[in-house]
Image 1 (cartoon, helix red, strand yellow):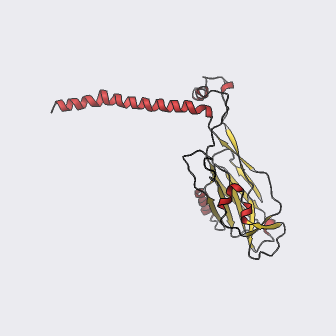
Image 2 (tube, helix red, strand yellow):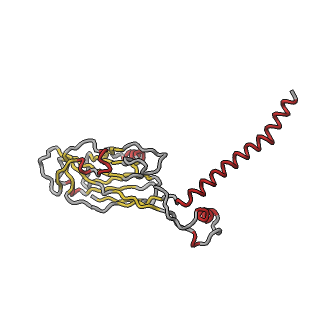
Image 3 (cartoon, one colour):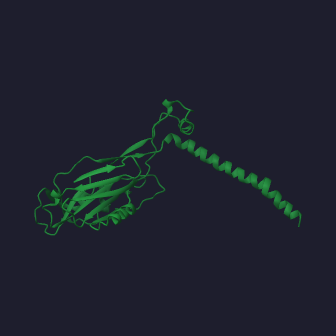
Length: 249
């Protein structure tokens, strides 16, 4: 089985899976599934996935979404169990094997620390291109997030029947420690004896920690300025009209 990522530097990457027909040739009595364990901050996009399957009129693929509750108002990783597992169930496959795209979306990670450039200088260089020298400008900050290689599993009617290149194990053994709470059952399955070990990598943008204080100051100043303008408008425009109306009664 092959797995690859497209748009790996965006907030909406896609994980593409491809299962060669030769891998399933001896497993016609089994139902293949793929386990995709996602790290904190990377989430399955069920709406895009369902629309994509509807457009392709593909009823042979089913996504099972195993997830714990996610608090969108908190920083990524603020809760230990904020992880997800996607189970791709394959009901049937063609002679050319199985291919499926899994749409994902990511959230900004914790702010990057240790930036040499002061926050006010960074903001000035972004807003006014000529306010800072080229050496003071920095590219977008990223953090590398790794996704474990997806795991192919076979659920077979005849558990005693041998499938070449696969070994038997409990389903929950294929869940890492961070995802153990998502394993619903420990049925006996088959998984390939050899599989890629190298993790897939996504570069997720992160805010610059040096910008937090200037942004807070600018936001507060903007709110106060807006409040002052509203109060001034009430005092110099609205209040005189009310007083004039009362005096004319």
